[in-house]
Image (tube, rainbow, N blue to C red; front, side):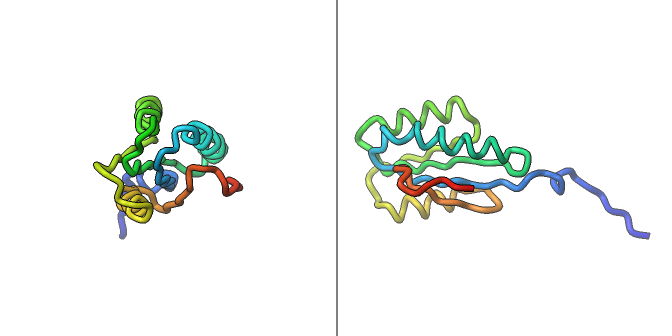
Length: 116
């Protein structure tokens, strides 16, 4: 006889990590967040989401906007570099911090359409 014990984690939705490297994107943060939030709400019955922003030491108000988002949405995590380490390092750091079963990288300027 085989006894199988379920812990509950077998039934959870898969976690999708959405990684966004940013540098001086204060004007784009809220439009990006709103667009992605709308799409993720439509898929909330299928997936869980986390938003990971890596701020490459912005000199505008980007980091403050990200901190405010993180304070109001528990899915948002923000990492700020002590200096500008470059775009590729921002992406790598986001991937390393991601907890998801899958990772998606988006640029914050919304130049690529968000289609699902």
